[in-house]
Image 1 (tube, rainbow, N blue to C red):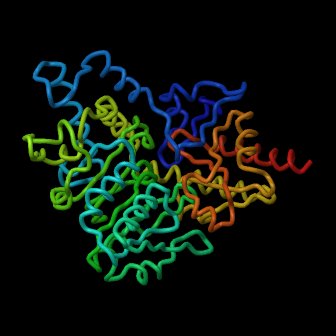
Image 2: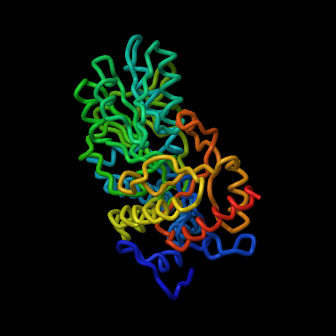
Length: 417
């Protein structure tokens, strides 16, 4: 790639963006680094790195508990980031934004604090075959504990959810529906608004896994009418921190998830009373620096424009799908229409283990993912133990996809011979 020949995709100047990411300036195995694993975690721009560095250099202190200047600045910035997150997803109130460790903890918080209070024997929980394990296992545990049934909406031959099953599986017995907005394997964009509307039609609550959507497209929780929505900072240029959005009335009615400092109002020998939202769910010392640095990540994405981010990834996916079809024998899982998927492409090479594929890519300086991507039921559906996955973000360009396809052809040649 040449910085003198900027590549613009729907308003994004990739060459200029790449200059903001120090890690992308290096070589791996003597080759320019091509990072295609953003579905796992994204790289960080200089602005985010500086925000993290500034916290430790200038105002490292515990939030909420100190009345001295450093603590007050840390608290103001930490809570200011919460309000910025609120606006980013258009929540009604900052009190509906709960900091967690990651998307997995956010979903488990709902399973424990809402699920154990509201799911009973004979109830049904509905999820989909497209889910990450973090949106399957908590519901398995809850269903087993409560004597509830867990059902899955299937996918069709194109990797899309079977729309008719949204209607037939979500019934009056359904108390909770858990669904992703975008698969981390197939990239499939789900009809999440239809799923939420169907859940509400039968009186059920809907939990949305937005780990692969909030970083990649505009998401408006009020427009979706989502009850709960979970995502992670590290997948959107930020540090390792999780976010749970929940409607205020639901959060108010829930018991705390963890007990300890900061989530209490008063503690007596025989009982305690709880803090206000959202701190009721934030026990102990939080990830302060990580929360604060989310401001810089959101500022960066807002400057790009989330519509532009989505359009850029859609164009990259379309380009990759078109190019990869020319490589003999490569099997792409999920939709072949870029309008139906995010910037994620998982594929299989006949008779070549994905780990071997990934190692050959690494020799060329290309970072891709190999494995089941925490989605074993979906891989089983496709008759695959594992796949290789390339995932794109704002700093990727078509030239990198050319190198991906060139290396993929090399894999075929190596194992054919």
